[in-house]
Image (cartoon, rainbow, N blue to C red; front, top):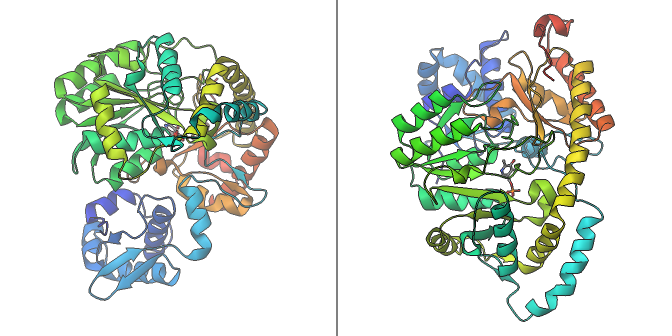
Length: 482
Ligand SMILES: Cc1ncc(COP(=O)(O)O)c(C=O)c1O
């Protein structure tokens, strides 16, 4: 089925498209950038020229010329009687992939598109040997399973219990990552066109799955310091969303931690509105300043109302593709049924590796956080030195800085960056249509020297797209937070 982008949707996606150039090329640029960073999904049908010109209140000629330009450059395919569909030229597909936060692979490029760490060595290799030694007793089975092996479910339940959320193994389902867990829950707990509340900014893949499953988003804006409790409370009570997706512990991308009183208020509002809460704790263990976190969000409100999801991707290694969810056993049974239509379950060998890693988890986490603390400092200093016009709030944990560029240049910057050997994601990738153009996310996953070189390259890309010679005049004087 073809995804149809309505005139109002496209207007919101390319909001503020008019710059100082000719109208048709500004319009073509805005659509091209939105295609590359994934806000207009590949293959989607965009409005007819006449319809878009009336929506944007511009001449039809401008839209016709913009569409022609997009066709000539390989971003649009028009079929007689069927409409115009967005596409991507083959030589740009790597860039588009990296904008959609898959690994950028050009040699020597510094990749800020993914907030992922390389495997923990030698711990991963040791865990793999130990897992291989224990595989014997599983070789007579299929070698994969839908819900998770008992030893892993027990280890995860124990860890949650120790963190203050009493959990039994039958409340745990092992998944192929936290994103997989979210997707299953979205399918099970909502229907097409239902409302799903989430923060703006948020984790981009969550937005993708909401769009792919044709639910509607209710984005609630966050400030530089975190959540606005009144706004959230009102949004939940007034829109009564079927589900809300929240990251209360080291939110991606802002790094914010949700205070207790907001957790309580949201749990109350969700109970009254019949909204299921999905709490993503993927980053909860990455505390860099010994911040004492409030109790896990699922301890607030009615039992089983909030479903927790988590993953080994950030603390251990994304290559394990191992995540989980914590829910009532009845929900887990339903999810296991649903899962069968798309995959056969997690390999037992990676589950055994996960068991081994969980035995040394505290040691692993302290190695990770020590490294991330140095990286965070390195990136912050590089920004101060090479991009003094930007600003950010230093997060107490997580993996990224949410950088205010001081100007609405994020998409153009992301487009120019690869020419300077650096890849980053445009701010709008983290929010709804057309928003967050003044922001970019910079993960502190690189060592300080690499991060500094990356930021130097970003500064060079920024000079390319900023007309005035003195960047500081354009950017004003943002203040670095400590
Ligand atoms: C908050 C959050 N949740 C989920 C994920 C995805 O995790 P997984 O690799 O386990 O699917 C990420 C990865 O960036 C993330 O930042």
